[in-house]
Image 1 (cartoon, rainbow, N blue to C red):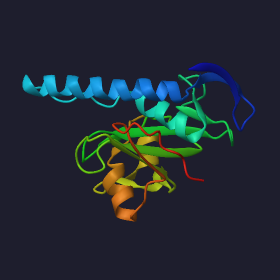
Image 2 (image 1 turned 30 degrees about the vertical axis):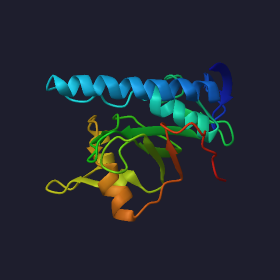
Image 3 (image 1 turned 90 degrees about the vertical axis):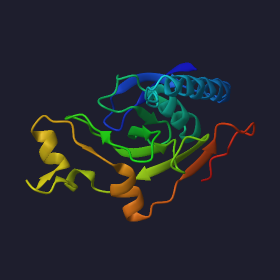
Length: 189
């Protein structure tokens, strides 16, 4: 991982972490360790740990030519080195996610990393580009509240990206990787 300088679309300069293929190998080991911890937690009657933010964000950066901002660039998790787009990366490791957003979350691009595309964690991670108007999604039908309404109330909007967007719209992943394979995946253009 290297520290790099990156410029946002609005001209703001920030710094971030640039990950490489050596880091990918570290992430593969972390994945194995994470799975071991989850097995131990389950044996004690506990719940699995959520996907660590650096895990999904570092994977995104490696395969989408981006840097991780560490909170230095608005509410963006990453910034594209190709387009200067501010990116939010959401993820889950269960079949039915409940993804939350901060009351001031913004992004130029939104991606979802699904660590359980087959309903369970098996090493596969599928990345989806979420390219729809999330702000107008109705989250509380009884009150007619949209995502944006809840943000304006200072609340954290929560909903399932997998069922509300990916499954409902039949989205296809833009990248599929398997962390258990030795071969490092190539990103298709």
